Image (spheres, rainbow, N blue to C red):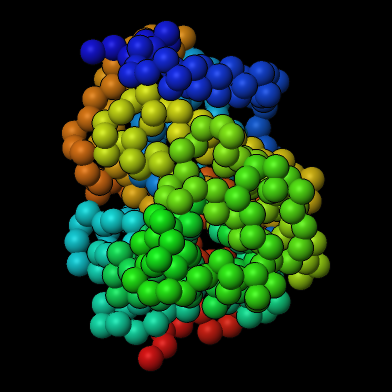
Length: 392
């Protein structure tokens, strides 16, 4: 079956938003859509002060290519594809060829393999130091920006340590205990006491009240995000995961605000941004939404790249935790009006996923290597000692 430029999907509203986001991206990147307009290599001698790590959950080469062909045709480029350095990583977990986001994220956050379903602990339960925690310990600010619940697997691996990714109530409390400066996403249900409607906690702890006592500004709307100031921001824009449609802030807007807030620290910052729902669209074998979610993620990549291009001391790295769906492009037209998309699974696959880098030291991410290497290189670049590190 052909996926057509004038797509037909369930619901007039969803169709409107897919077309609207596509039109907006094309207009915002009219010049940048040209295939020869690229982000240049920067001097490898420049000091890296900030790292922006963007993870497209479930995003493989076919997800990127299909979004590009649909939006710009075969000759165009997404912002991701304008980055000057590319590589590939293997994604298997400690106990399975096919990983899931907890184990894959743990590798990307700690430099260690673990078993599927575990969050920044070793297979025998030892705590693994994360790159975000290591950056915090040398005075850098930190941020997590996602379109899922902030307690979901990928954000969780950077600032919590639990045996099961399903223990999101504990993850929520650990995120606050770790004093992550900026947290933006969904998941209010894990911060509310059990007696409040919609809560998924099994105790009466009110983590929103705790956050406020500990200096966090708590926000729930796009307007509050735009006006937010301060060293600690907790933005929970939905009870569960985000809808990724207005009036919520989109991923690019959240990324832009996080960079604005974190860049006030002269010692630098570490920011992880996840396009969380690419994965879910792929689980559904939903081509339309896969493309839409990839385009939304690509807009956040542009925000990071434009900041790094001006700043000159920011390393931007884009990758995925794994591929999802076994997506393939089996045919179509050069202008993208038709795409023949095939899927081999509704689960994850075991193929390597791409890495894209821009900024000082970007060239260190070329080649094919294990996913555990990424945070180890981050630590080396920043001069962080005792990383990776396994605790008790």
